[in-house]
Each structure stands twice: as C-alpha cells, then as structure tokens.
Image 1 (cartoon, helix red, strand yellow):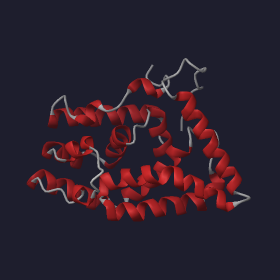
Image 2 (tube, rainbow, N blue to C red; image 1 turned 30 degrees about the horizontal axis):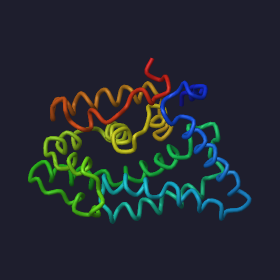
Image 3 (spheres, rainbow, N blue to C red; image 1 turned 180 degrees about the vertical axis):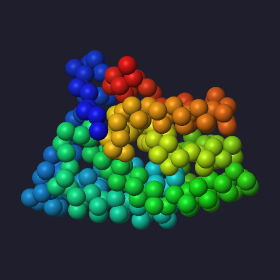
Image 4 (cartoon, rainbow, N blue to C red; image 1 turned 90 degrees about the horizontal axis):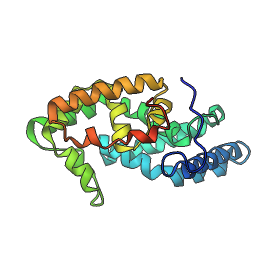
Amino acid sequence: MTESPSRPSPGTGPPGADTAAAAAAADGALIAASLEEPECFAALFDRHAPAIHQYAARRLGRDAADDITAETFLTAFRIRTRYDSERAGVRPWLFGIAAKLIGRHRREEVRALRLLARSGHDPVAETWTGSADDRVVAQAASRPLARALARLTEGDRHALLLAAWADFTYQEIAEALDIPVGTVRSRLHRARRKMRTATGTHSPLNESFDPHAAEGDLA
C-alpha cells in the first residue's frame, strides 16, 4: 500500500474535504469505542449500509445485495480490531470488504452483463426499486456498455465501478482494493480505454469520475 497523502489545509482542498475528513474521524472513533462497547458499531451500519447496499444492488441485484450488505458488516465487526486509523476512512474499508464478497459472484455478474449485451434484458435492473436514479438506469440499459463491462478483468471492473458508482477518489480505491495508487491509475486508464472503444467517448462511466477529488494523487 502507498501512504495516504497529507490532507490539504482547510479551504485549499477539494470541496467537502474537511467534512469528509471529519466524518472519517468520527467513524474511526466509533470503531475504537466499539472495542469496549460493541453496540457502538451499530451506528456505522446506520451510516454506511444504504450506500453499500445500493452499490451491490447495481452490480448484482437486490437479493444478492441484501446478503452482501449483511455479510460486509458482520465481517467488519469481526475484524474491527485490525482497522487502521491511518487509512483514508472507514468507507473504503467497508467497500473493500464488499468488493471481495461481490468478487465471489463474479460469474453471476458477468453472466448477467452478457445477457444484457445479447438481448437487452437486464435481470439485475429488474430487481431495483423505483427510486433507482436515471443515471444508473441509463448506464445499465446500454448493451455496448454491458458487453464492455463483461470483458473487463475483475480488478479493472472493481476500480472502474468504485470510481463511477461509489464516487471514490484514486486514494480511496487504493485503500478499498489494497493496491497502490499507481495500480489504480493503470486499471482505470485501461478500463476507460476499453469502454471508449466499445461505447464511444460519451459513455457515462468514462465521465463520472472527478479527478480533482484525488487530493493531489494525479500529479
């Protein structure tokens, strides 16, 4: 793992950086408190379970997302003594656990993407609730996009979708997947190149990541 870059001074970093840092510190404090008072961990579930569930549902469908969300927090609770407070935050840690669990369903995910690419039928999108936003629906409805996603390696797909659907920075992706930031850059560059070739330069997945939020990692 590469070391996290120093955080910018107040008012000099990306918009919301101070708020995100404060939230990460609060989450870390909850984990520390849960070592003596396990019930404190419930607050982390309340804060982060909806985002984990939404991300898993976008990738595998609602039913699988229920199981993955529950297992993510059960695992996090069991290994909370190993949480490193120097990490970018609790959110990448939790999404990293979820990504490993999603990886166990790689065949199902690829099978659904290939079905969408062939027929336009999306068994994953059918399980979403009516509140799924139009941006995600538009992405999943693209047959060329589904074909391109299915052809990505698992690692490239994880990196791309964490950036596009979880709005992660390069550093957060590195933390979540336990890889160097340089590897994140390589994976995203390779994945986006393949997506552009398959879907054109205006694919939502090629445009949804804001590089300035990487806190200096792009230099």
